[in-house]
Amino acid sequence: MNGALTVVGLGPGDARWLTPQADAALAAADALFGYGPYLERAPVRRGQSRHPSDNRQEALRARAALERAAAGSKVALVCGGDPGVFAMAAAVCEQIESGPAAWRTLDVEIVPGVTAMLAVAARVGAPLGHDFCALSLSDNLKPWPVIERRLDAAAQAGFVIALYNPVSQTRQWQLAAAFERLRRYLPATTPVVFGRAVGRGDETIAVTTLQSADASNADMATLVIVGSAETRLVPRPGHTPLVYTPRSAIA
Ligand code: SAH
Image 1: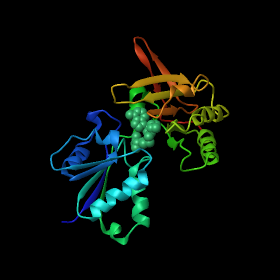
Image 2 (image 1 turned 45 degrees about the horizontal axis):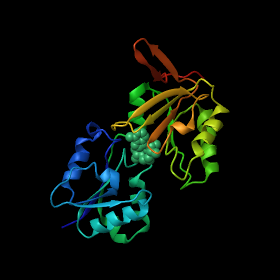
Image 3 (image 1 turned 135 degrees about the vertical axis):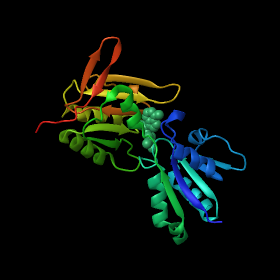
């Protein structure tokens, strides 16, 4: 039997955001790999082995999944959100590129998922309604000066910025430093959205301004959207304001 590897995005948490394709890929696998809390989201199927691993073990996890697929199993490697956004699909590609030749003949499929910034944006309106970019604030895999350069460029170019990985146990100062950086270029009133654990039981959404944005309100499960100078709020009696970025921009 030929093995195969499917990298499956589970979405941000709400089961309704698991696509039918992702659901089918989980059901078809005979071995499931992934970070423990994500694996717990996959329904248990008899005869299917489960291989939870720790966070930040991406390369090891990708290799283990590839080895298993090369040995003939149908492997599903799961991750939160979309697998191509700061997640396992790139880790798998890295290992396929540098690993044994046999890994390059494997069937590999990437199953997309709803990424966190789309789920958070949908909660508040349409902050990503015009040009935007996504940036990981983690300096585990890139030096901090590179992040600063990208923040400067994105803000000056007028992009709305979605910040992934704003905080972790070992990275506590980066988000405050990023806000400080962005205040150089953007109006104090620029809307900032904190979306925490969106789609899960403990979800919280907060809308504030760049001037008042407090980095201590974010944790590892938070996605932060910083608007552009065009992003605005529409007040609505009896409802939370809509945050949106108009579709057109002036020169
Ligand atoms: N592949 C994932 C991102 C992995 S990076 C995706 O496409 O969504 C991990 C970061 O994603 C977290 O630090 C946080 O910034 C964001 N994130 C993941 N799930 C989230 C959720 N349910 N709510 C808010 N942010 C989330």
